[in-house]
Length: 82
Image (cartoon, rainbow, N blue to C red):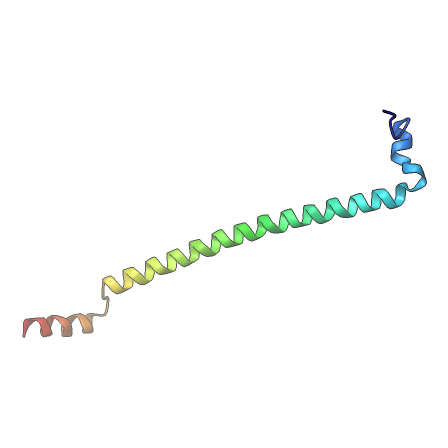
């Protein structure tokens, strides 16, 4: 089997089409890198959103379990007494 290029210089020159070939390679790699970075950013945002929702639901459950209005508490305890 014969190698496609006889030297590294010939490989990087790509038979005279180096500008187009390496520009396409760079565009592809930059696109993939951008996609990877965006995916990581979305993943972090999703986890933060889930944590915020869970904290909100926990606060709502706690608020529903312990009434904090003294007027309502007094009225509620009077209703139970009767």
